[in-house]
Image 1 (cartoon, rainbow, N blue to C red):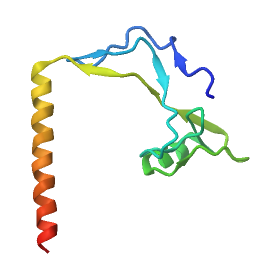
Image 2 (image 1 turned 90 degrees about the vertical axis):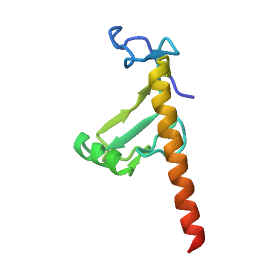
Image 3 (image 1 turned 45 degrees about the vertical axis):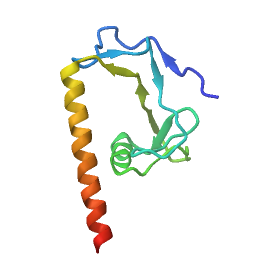
Image 4 (image 1 turned 180 degrees about the horizontal axis):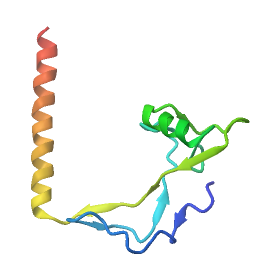
Length: 115
């Protein structure tokens, strides 16, 4: 499995966004073996490229690869840390947006069925 999947060396001054709190004490490598909008990482969370410019472009396009090749000179991986919303006002805003999106989706699905 992945080695070194947790990092306690990230700067201590990194705070969660206002209205949120950390759920964990450390950062972890995002090594989920499922395609993401960034591409499919290898077992240790790495995406590979021939240059950072090209790798960043592939990440933006969702075409990055977790397969290391002979011409790959650079690699990147994403670190994550779970947070929880602790602001009642922010939670109300999030719920309101989710409800609006659900109503919009329902209207779209209904209009597609009518065609």
